[in-house]
Length: 159
Image (tube, rainbow, N blue to C red; front, top):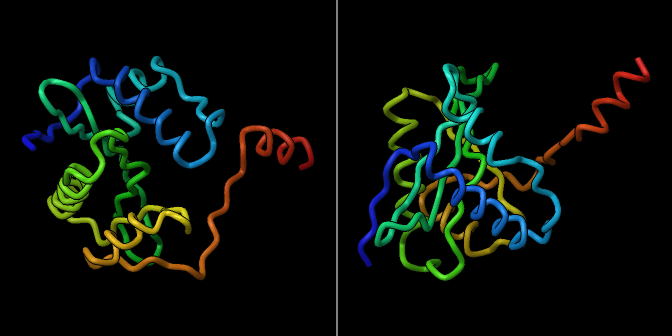
């Protein structure tokens, strides 16, 4: 299958949002997506973009995306966080996900980051197998901590 990977454009965000929603369904959180098209356009394409985005295109249609942003580690220095890597369900297994991951790693390498990190659900065995095959270390002894928007408000109210 022929596909191209390129830097996303603002016009791609409608399809990127569709893929984000597909991922939410896949991850059994269909109602969790709160980000809007306007958020993606504003946050990704302003003077100081909050994220970087790559897309994989097949026959002129975006069929995959990788969304990442810069972080700083007190142990390592500059790192890159891969927030989501999504391939449309009907295109999985065609090598698009691997190609997107390859481009994320190249991007991080070119930036000179000391680490690239991301999360994966413990039941997503195909993804875990791919990441380990590529040399990633899946840390099974760390817990991801989230403080929701309501949690932030409650936290502040109790200070």
